[in-house]
Image 1 (cartoon, helix red, strand yellow):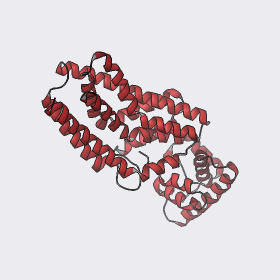
Image 2 (cartoon, helix red, strand yellow):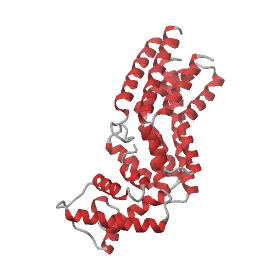
Image 3 (cartoon, chains in turn cyan, purple):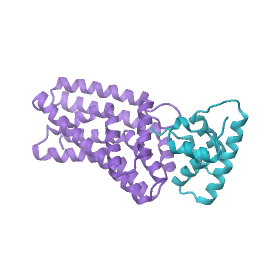
Image 4 (tube, chains in turn blue, green):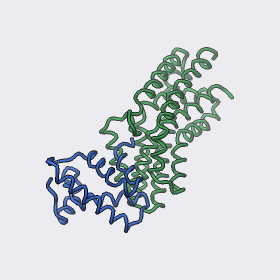
Length: 100
Length: 229
């Protein structure tokens, strides 16, 4: 799976087009931090956990042959990885797009 | 208390048991917590509720005018019988497909509409947008609320003129009671996970409650407005 460097990852985010989002550690970590904020989790430990989880996920994805991943699959993967750190955050990822 | 008053109260309660309004408010709450301070989040929630209640009140008022215009007063027993049958059909729909099956609170809405509401909730930053989102959520629930609003409107125009506006307001307020409860939960500091966990845990109870509410309302109308009335 092709990953973007930090600068280009930020560029793709600024376009705000979901189709153009390429997976990187920063992209996943930022997303986890954003979700963590909604649960009032402390910023410093959240950042560390987010980076650890994001790195694990990117490594896992690199091992697979797939060039793309569905958002729902990515959410499930994040939910599974983050469960050890925060059950609430894991629950948020499990229920993404399933509230209505 | 006249049967018409009971019909209005019961229709309001059944309306309140529907879940789209709560789901959209929860999405708005969740999205706003990550972006704004709590005060702004509460402000957005209040405006969302205002939009929802205003559209409900306007829809009931418009339906009162429509029923009065078409039937020259309250509906006749034949029409009420048809409405009873439709309410029974809606009860079955609620039991069978209002909620999607599985461990989530996904509703019957087509995915594209659900995604649109989700994206609107995420991009809502101002009070006006929150107000519009409240109206949108109220409108999207129309296939299920239409009959409730019709029944309530029919009962409202059967009441003496002084009571009509009061019962219109009562219906509108009852229909948004769960949103007000959720607003207080936000004030208390409950997180979206707490609320969503509760919704998932009691999903089947809510399904039975809503469906039975539709059925009871239909039977009540059949008994007190068609047979006795």
